[in-house]
Length: 484
Picture: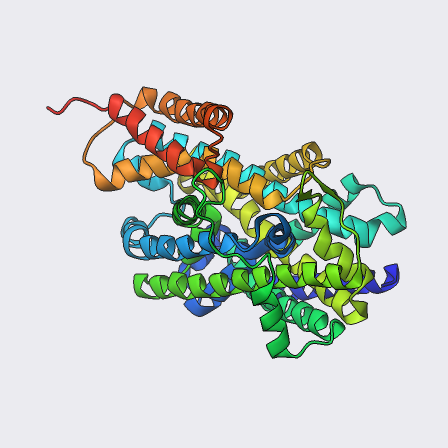
């Protein structure tokens, strides 16, 4: 594709987002940026959350990682389904009963201000790194496909993307995002289907032959029963369950959209519907991954590897799409990258702005002019943090999705532990020790994982979130108040 054509795609797509933003920004109030006036249609929210849940990381990391990890990610997907049920029947009723905007307000109701701010702070750290790493992968693809050809440095590309997101979200925030994410989800699912059809046609396969080729391929192993492996079934399933609870149910960026729905019944339907949408989409990604490696084998394309592991698996899908799949495949993929970039990052930036404004700036108790000032200053600060983290990780290699889940295990584990104690016990805490207990749990998890790998060749894998949550619960019990 020519640089001019790519520029036209970006301009058209962004113009469409700005048009939606203008329509949704009418009749906005001070709180519209954060709660969308609590009038979002539940089905639209569910469909739009697919875009936030997929991101460019899923778009390239899940298919690319098949070469090193087969279809073991499917075990994780199975666990996520159970996690969504927990969110529907446990968390949503609580959040709606308390009428929260920031979901970490629950910790204030249950324990107190220090615990509340501790939980929110762990979210801010985790979401900042998670969102920045998703943005990083998107920027790398945009840089490779377009901005490098114009000799535009990558740090300028980062700024451009962040400014574009700010332009269509700064006024109405989550209200706009609910609608733009639905549009972006449509493009993402279309991209998956177009890519699969393109590869099928390139290989001269019928639909039946394509399915048969995927099923019979050596990479199509679904379950790993090796207890020492990080991709073991039980580790993956439990991780999928807990990471879903933490990264969706206890994640402000995901739950904030659900909380814009005006009643609990529709909110539950939203999450259940979304769970099926996202599981289906991720399963398609796995099938696409096998097809990508079948394509490289049949076309004799050399892939760099070391010690039996493919290198730069995140680059496989973009490389094949831009150089082998023809104009339609390249256009579809590029639109998918743009859609996933905006859909996954806009909600994260809004959520970070919401959490900091409500949890640390006392936003809801401020007068009108102060509210506007707080929102704008926090939004600017969040964008600066995104920029700096992307720069920090720019030279990172490998599957970024693994890095995101590892970081989430250490940062969301304490949040999960706090909620488990709050929901399923009646104990109260000596609050001044809560931050120390949460930090200690994350640190001990990290050290234990290193020890088990060195001594027993046993990798916690994504299950570090379980170890972290258990240690958090244990430490919180140590600092509980004595019953009166």
